Image 1 (tube, rainbow, N blue to C red):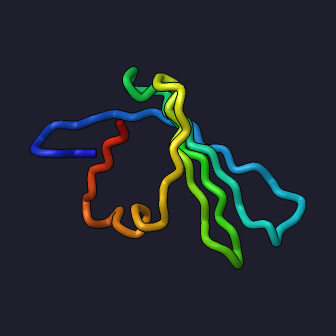
Image 2: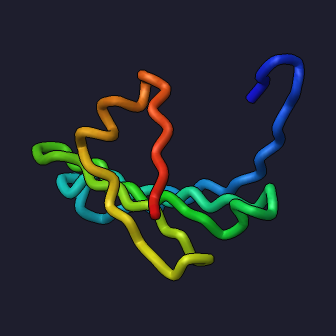
Length: 85
C-alpha cells in the first residue's frame, strides 16, 4: 500500500484447502505474518455457491473472533475503516 510517498509492507500466508464436496463452496484462510502488530491476525472466509458468504476476523492478541457482516463486506470499496473494541 502506498500513501503520500510512504510504503507499508505486509507479509501474509493464504491457504485454500481442496474441498471434496464442490457444492459447499470455497474456504480460505489469510494469516498475517508482518508487521508485528498484525502478526497471527487472520481472516477466515467461506464462499458459498447458493447462500451468502461468511467471513470472520480472528484476533489472537485479543482472544476474539469477530464475524464480518455482509453490510460491512459490501461497503469495503467506500474506504470504510472498521474498528473493533
